[in-house]
Image (cartoon, rainbow, N blue to C red; front, top):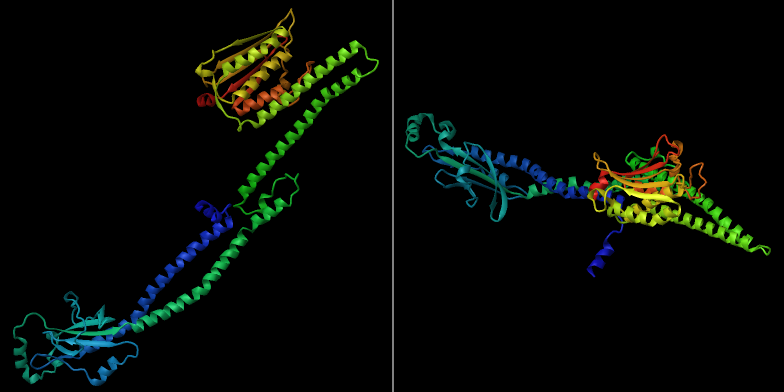
Length: 512
């Protein structure tokens, strides 16, 4: 059940437009929250700077009010107007504190948190920190005032009493006497200012983001428009129009695809032309025996036909039917060879064993014609004669070579015909070689390539045939990575004979 539900949401086909859109919009939508967080942090810093400067100024101003009494005590006197001005804030609460050298409160709020001892700064140097006051977060500016560094004039001591002042200053005490001055402020104004900055920055983005998505969508639609145009041009073509597509009318990125399609169209055009030629030749070859069958049948049906004429007609009908049957079988073999290169299974084939089966089947026909059919080469089971291929097609290839030799090799008592099937292994390339040699009329050098064309028969031969045997041999050999060549079996002699050589590559043997 879960698998069925999942199949409902699973895309049956990938969408190039959707994938590109996802890869473009996903980073944009992911970066937007990151931009929001970074903007918030920057806004917090920007909002704190002016208020921090004001806080530092207030702390320094209060520090300037710290004085030294004639009896060397710390004094702090904050006028009432200054106190009211300091605390006059509509948004935030302001606290201050002045602590003497002995921890006594000289002025301000007693419960304002003190800085840690390590934060004690030099005279009048202000430090900032975040703290908590009465349950509220506050920003605190603190500074230390060194009483010993204050001059008598700054402390308000009269010059006439310099001797007494000197005596007071020389009284022993432990370390410098420091007065702590702190000013604290809640963070309401800072938060308000940071929020205003965020609004000023982010609100335009809420309008820009949908616009950016729309622009990306339109740009992508415009970018893949050439693909749609290419599709329209292909759909508008006629079924028989296999001309190449214009590679210059498409973008550079699509040109390799169009080039591959053009290559496919060219191969398809060649294949269709070959099929048309093949069908035309097949129809022509079948027309002759079928016409002969019809003519002989008409002759046999004549009222005045004698017994001898009837027998002759039946004999001709039988011969024509055999020829037609042979032609049809050859056509089927060629079609199977052309379409079986990738569809049929392949295995390790013992070529000598296949040759033995073919020779046993062909031996009666060779004896009827008075031919000497023999074999030379390796024995069956040898590792050097193993070929990786389809046994049915390989057997068909050898059978056509042997049938071709039997068909075209004459034999007389004065000069009997000899056909030799030979197997060899090249000692250098380790290629397996099959040779079918005869002492017949041979094939002229000018026709050795044309005899592999369907329905072509060498000139000067009066033997009936379909002209399909050697094309079948060539097609099967090529599907097994082999080559086929023709040479004179006995150069310089008359007749020269013919030697057909099928050479398998070393790779066929290695796979085996």
